[in-house]
Length: 496
Image 1 (tube, rainbow, N blue to C red):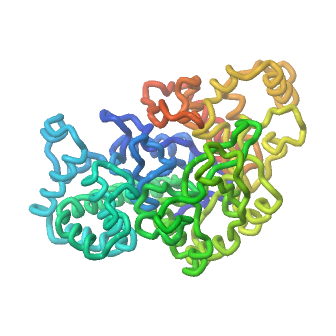
Image 2 (cartoon, one colour):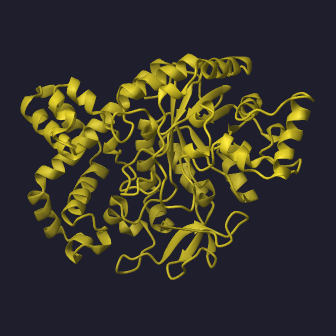
Image 3 (cartoon, helix red, strand yellow):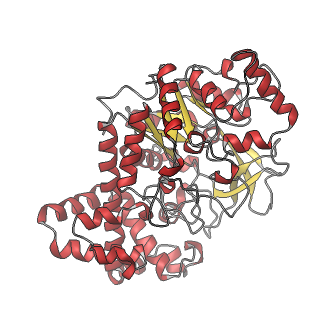
């Protein structure tokens, strides 16, 4: 579905809000695609915002990081709304009262009811979904069923016949695990159905959905298990190099992410069909898609698996031009955004410019004290997406509270020059004003900044393994004054 009735979200002057699905209010342990998601779309419509950005919505590992997922295609079943399943008669009120505590068990019950009671048309829709997505769904469902059978062990730890995809072994497993495989496929059918219903509602409300994909996939994923030839693995299917970024101002040892690198020669031999398929799924679910770590499409930092840090890696060229040509040829209506933060070379800028992709500008990075800082509002070009901060940043209040006096004075000096001499700094409002007044076509504000929340409410702290991805808001945190303020600002800056 495209937004034919809406202005293009990457050409018109617009505003959006960054909020992951998990951060929606909920009676359960995470936000979902139920009534609160629709309320959030209504909120965006009411204030004049026309874009809702989420983090990746794929199925994560146990740490819940949306940037390390079990599939590049499969949606997170935790986001399925149980209340919607109740209204459809697939679950009862008693089911939702806690008699069955696991969402997995509830989905099994919903599947059983679906097969036994629903009409022929609905079962045909399920069948059509499975057929349409069979190129990834069949492998994913078997992968997840086997992973459950092997007590969540990664596929590289499975018995060799399963690890190496022996045809006879997998055929037997498909028969033995047929019920569990069917439930896994059903959960994906429900996820996609609920998501696309929300997307249709958002389109009706003139709100575009803005998605996000990590450039790399997790080693323990259905993608690597099913098609290991597309990744840099040795004869035993172990990684030889892993992804990351080199040392920089923020981290003296760099970042060792641990993801496998792509075997680009193998991908090119298949006309980048793996990537095109991945992007086709995202293009179905979203109106805009951000490619995280875009610079890795020009050259990526490869770290030997024997290295404990990212220091001793090397830059290895990637065929970004050929890849983007294949994606845009297959999906001419796709709207892409390049996450081009960090140390960006002229080659990366040229690649982004060739495909006219908006880059990202983060105002929290703007106040280093130099006039040529590309994140300063007056230096931001029109073909950009500007943020006060992202999911990896502190909230603006937390950022302002934690900065040193020198940086704070740079902020104050900029405010005095760009606004008015006697201006009393007020965060996060000042940074929100800067973002919306900038020339960037799209201005994105994290929900935490609209709510003026401090650093205790940040979503993620890079380099840490605990305490992330859990933040959730509630509507009581939104005051009448805050809603009126952002509404007026969006209108005044002609982003309505």
